[in-house]
Amino acid sequence: MTRALAALAGSFVLACTTAPMAFAQTAPPAAGGPTFTKDVAPILFRHCASCHRPGEIGPMSFLTYESTRPWARAIQQKTVSREMPPWGADPAHSMKMRNDRSLSQQELDTIVAWVKAGAPRGDTADMPPVPTFATGWQLGEPDYVFEMPLEWTIKAEGAEAYLYFYQPIPFTEDKMARAIEIRPSNFAVVHHSGAYVVDIPDGYTVKDGYLYDDKGQQVPPTEPMGKKASSGDDAPLAGADKLISYVPGRGIEEHPDGFAKRIPAGKYIRWVMHYNPTGTEQTDRSRLGIWFARGTVTHEVLNLQAGDPVPGSGGKGLYFAQGKEVLYESDDTTGRRGKTPTIPPYEGNFKMMGVTPVNEPITLYALTPHMHLRGKSMKWWVVYPDGREETILDVPNYDFNWQTQYELEQPLKVPAGSKIINVAIYDNSVKNKWNPAPHLPVYWSEQSWDEMYQPTTQFSVDSRDLTKMPKKSTTSEPRQR
Ligand code: HEC
Image 1: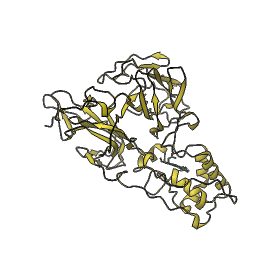
Image 2: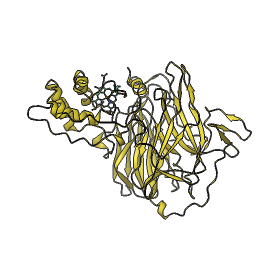
Image 3: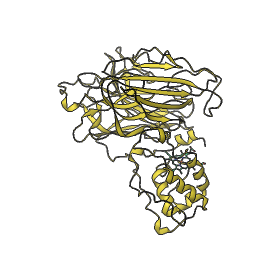
Image 4: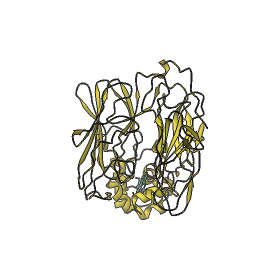
């Protein structure tokens, strides 16, 4: 099975933020050499079992000695090459991440020593308890669940276009979410999906998941209509629209204490669904679980694309393709990357760069590189006002199959006068084993045979302390048909 297929065939993987972290630290290899029960099982349970257990996307289970032993050599090979566990960040050049699932050098040495010694079992008494994993919602029953407003039938064959469904947010006041999870009802068919907060154009209405225009005509679900929403507060902020996205292995986000995503009253949830036909007709009705913030929320979590200015703080963002500035209009309807030059055939080193001016202090929480099959590497760094540079995240071998969000262990304070710079390299040559068509120019779109330059960071604006801001007095009602 190819990697991409394996990743898609599976059901839900525990998001790293919720993976059990309670296992004891691994001891250095014992004098008699490491054994499975004493030394290796704790490593596999901690770093691998979230995927490598029955019913998960890993092709074999590492919960028992019997099921692990036949794979000893493969385990050594895949861990030494750092292909497993999947983790794209180079730890030597990246800040510490709280969801880092990679092996420490010591854990790697233990595995290698164990395999070299013939992969012995060890004393049964040493075996740690098999970890338990949440089934269903990762944090237990959510406080509120949005169900996709309709059940969609995915045809047996062919390609499914991106689909957009809408539903009103029924709250009477803005709600702050400390955690959000999006779960397919049918994991086999959801290639990826997302939930966004949007406004709909004036005169438009929503009924049973579909959008209707000002003449009452249904907008086809394949058409991405709908304006971006403000954050719902007095001064509208861009970057508040994205709630969460799902790809196999990822679909939950939990924010640090005091920080939350806003779900504004009177706006709409837009579901963006990309389904994969599986040979038989299937249905899906994904769900969006919301856990409300407990205690005081001081800051709203926003999303920022590298190269865009910090919303509300002025300054001009900059994009470069192959060193030349890309002129764009940051207009939601035209798409700002319309003028990005295509990647030429056989080009092995196409460079995109985004420069975000930071005009007022912000705090960064997480970074998500998103490219497609030509994506080769991506790196973020900060240039501080005194000229000092610091790398935040370096992903030297980007892998499209693992859409990882990197969550900073310590949120990063970025002072006013800094710049956040992102560079991505694309490989359209024959050397790229994932490249479907090196002889063709590559355009920019959401389809995986085209490319995307979407380096997203999660951040908040320090001055926007919600405890010190005037409360909104009125909310608008969603326009339900
Ligand atoms: C996030 C999910 C995930 C985690 C965590 C993970 N794996 Fe995997 N692993 C997979 C998937 C999916 C495949 C099959 C596709 C592939 O090879 O990439 C795989 C494949 C493998 C293979 C190759 C099997 C073959 O057919 O040759 C080995 C060996 C392996 N994993 C070992 C590990 C070990 C050891 C760990 C922990 C140290 C680990 N994996 C952690 C998902 C995971």
